[in-house]
Length: 312
Image 1: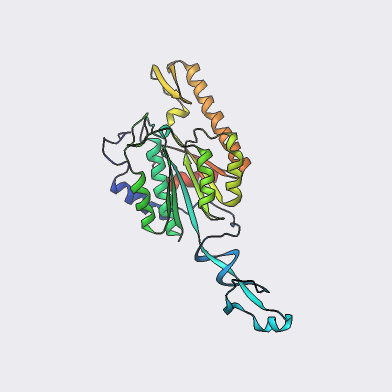
Image 2: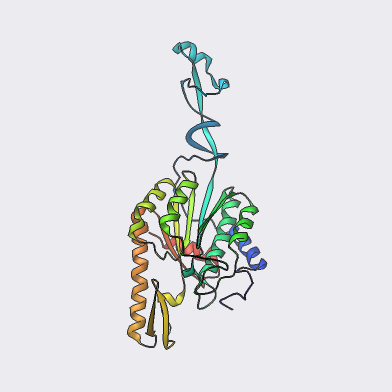
């Protein structure tokens, strides 16, 4: 299988998209605790915030702006001042997907680019969440941040593909990208601002540039929403094959190495393990779920189920 699509070709074909959408129905989802009360769009779920739903919350004294139809005349007569019935607000659940399309994601040595795998996962999750009745919003994290507003049903998947299914070349960004990459310092507060309290958020990235400096932002996001981070990685990042002299880009710098040297390969494997341990610790401290997914994984329902079973 070619790792990089031909120039001008989309990252995912129509057949691949169809298979991903169909497979989404086989996955039960990550196990999650009952979410806190939420505020959001009118829909089918009840929130703790007062609103215009059908579930009774309390009776309290009338305040300017309360609907006259909610006046409780009997309670008003007893209390000698106007009382109104208050109901829980109905909301439509929302899911947010951060899709990292920065230059570092345009890397692949085997089946596909990390970005292609991230897009496969984003399509899969969008189809899964919309089938559950959720609206799906996407934060495209590339050279700039681009917000795709919440949409329901198949239009959520079409919106995602219309923005993200673009050819990507290693060493560059998505076709047409310009300027420096956006950062998690920018992306995490935007997610918290745009999505209602209690939303479910997936962070799909290799998490380049994410470190302890973003712990507070992650914690604030996790207090407001349920957050699941999925690290995308290429097998060569985990275990470098013996390919002779190589020039590799790490942390914005070029490094010339001899990949035939066992000590060099051991050092790279240790570096990857330490990075994963640091990411897992950061997410745990922030209250964020963490899992890792290789770019070579083909069966996403199986891979996600195994990841969920292996989490602490």
